[in-house]
Image (cartoon, rainbow, N blue to C red):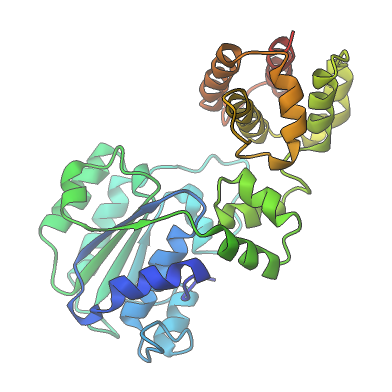
Length: 338
């Protein structure tokens, strides 16, 4: 179901931008850290514009218009998303064996042009939400730019992006920008606790302060750092020989390569922080282990491994030999502390 209400950390910012709702700009660019609720902000923003019974200047979430949006049936709102993100607006089950596109295609832009030239059905506005704009290729970007430069009457375009790099400067210059900052830590923790997230502080740190990511990660596994990885780090910190092959054998079924890379990227980032005299950013409960490990390595080694892992992450979604890939990561890690 699509959200019509802002998250607690978004109310003040939303109120600031929606106070002149009757004279709203035709193109908006919403950007900020991944996992802080930008998609929900955009849908709640749209719902407020189209709501037929505003409550305290926000969408009521109960009128006909709001209910249509929640069920993705509103005739005056359209979503442009990559096929891989279609689950945000539909509950259709996709065949996991099919590799879905991560791009917003040119035909998706073209298909929406007849719709934007039709008079609104229920409201006096029509809204297009494009998520995420970073997934536009150059051809799609140019097609979008043409729509923004020559906007049809009563059409509002809401563009959502994690970062501005890669977006055409001419698109950016024609949009009213809303930057969503990292939410206040206490507000995020309160929201996570109310949503029954265990170890909320650890999960919020692991995601760099992104509460939505913290919520979804916590539903997939028990702890930010797998117990077997923590045990491996503990062995390394105490100069105990690591039985790498038995570790891989025992945990092979639970290993997901993109997840494994992310965890070790954050481990080495935290080690670099420790070496420079700071506290860990991601694994706040592993500080003592990191301090011991930092005595067995140096910043150059950790930075090189971090860069190496970044390069490996570019390959992580391809069909590779999982055992070889995981073994490679663990071997590199062990060699860093000799």
